[in-house]
Length: 287
Ligand SMILES: [Mg+2]
Image 1 (cartoon, helix red, strand yellow):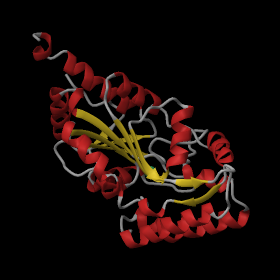
Image 2: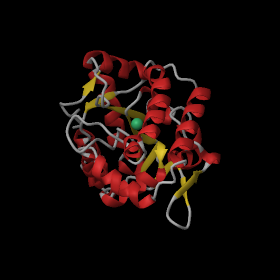
Image 3: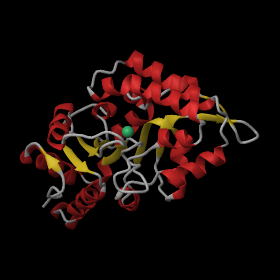
Image 4: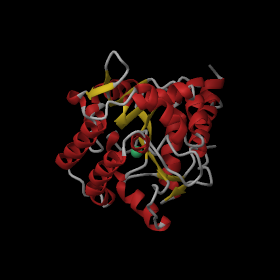
């Protein structure tokens, strides 16, 4: 029998259990995972730090660069938190940020070193990816961050995502970042469109999705309701405080089914429960 791990928050027990039971009945061959990257799969070296790609880039820029980056971030973050960011503004702000970062021609090796010294994989993320890999459940990382950084993290922690859909930094022959790929800008609000090709073919073969995100807009990475279970990682960003009760309520309003504080361990537990439940169904036993 499927149970909801006790550290997870939900609005109503019954609809979540119904979804989970349907997922278990359909089995892991019908399941895939779509996860956001920054602050969903990343955390920080110490508990309470909540860091990702953009913090790493700050570590590599001179003070005036950090100041300019912060000014861009603060110009949209309050609107984003309020769920009122528009696509036009998101596109403009992400482009400004990537233009700024690439203007410093960082060495890709320095980005790797900085990432590994500043950020870390969130607790439970390794267990989650391992549970998926050992049960042949495809994983997709869909991010408005930077692909090169996601690859660094995946290699370092031996994660094997099937797809990484994100923004590409262009690196020249000397190993320095010289530009970014403007054709495929993924910002916080167009993830569903930019990942459409890869995601829709996966969805045809495996209709059930576990979606993981950290902001309200991440619920839109994948369309649908009954065959999507949306889980939010709720962990205050550095320098931000939140009212837990209020943030949990807002998560449900945004469309999340479950909320986890800090850790992805309960999500790994759900994946294991789904695969174990399936392997114990009478239909499988009589085959
Ligand atoms: Mg994120």
